[in-house]
Image (tube, rainbow, N blue to C red; front, top):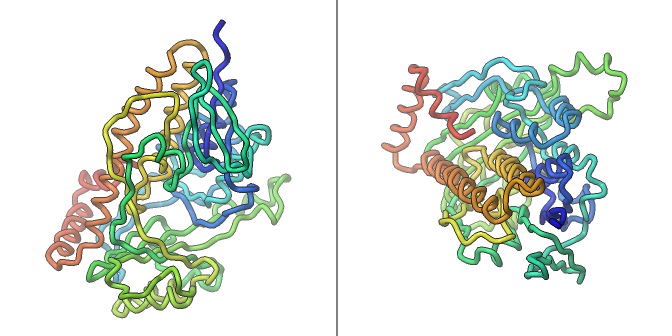
Length: 423
């Protein structure tokens, strides 16, 4: 007699929780093991831009009521994507079709903390907090056993590493898979939006994602999370209270080659010193952009060394696999990392549900998932890396060519679709 399938997921992030929701909805036994001690741990992070790809994955995995709650809790759908130069001159503007926040394919900003909170709903009996994964081994009857730092173990039929770019599972499963530094350093922060400062924010940033190409290989990105469209509905919704209102803010990131910041160890700098390091490279930038950096809440400012994964070919499939950043970690310059992880989750859920129903054998189903995931996942890695290199080109000719391409696309509508590819 065939035993019921049991799935174990390492990591309670976006991809892992989306997968868990999908499996649970389809009656597949699943447990999630998360190293955080509670849902409130490690709530840092700004917005995610959930694209049509990410929304389709979430809709396929979440119970309808939970997807509707996510849509209602999201920020106002983005109106467009605008590329600017450092003087706020328009290079390329792509308007998105008008969408309501409830539309499945709306491009919507979602705060990371809010997304995680919603994805955890209904999983109280599924997520085990305070369980730091350390290793796996083969168990009896084709099972796999996961070991945790507290000395406990868990066993199941499938083990999935959804534990992010610093995955502890990946090195054991794929010791040849590498992440490397790109040489780019990013400093980011956020500015709370209010009626008094909204007028000082460049309008394109309030409309949607805004990449800004600066001189000498410097780059900036900014985007807003707003709930202005939903305010009129608050009073008419009995279940809503003032505490339900999410924070409105502009998030920004400034990036450049490490050498531009001199010998300073950015991790050792205070928030004000990190802002000063960015502003030192923005002397001839538009005052409104410099003001964004100056106004950033000190508690939100951080720096990171941008890394990327190195593509690898398919491996010998077994009952342990990975999804999201645990394998195809990419730079943030295409904005598709979370959406790709959600795509993984939806694809893996389909494969495992088919196995659970007896429609497919486990290893062939996982092999097909891995083959497809490697193809589109590392395709996104390459595209993201290419964008990073283009945005941070230091040679004047390269920067001029990039701007010329953007301006050409601004005049030739069919070319605009190229800049939305893979989202």
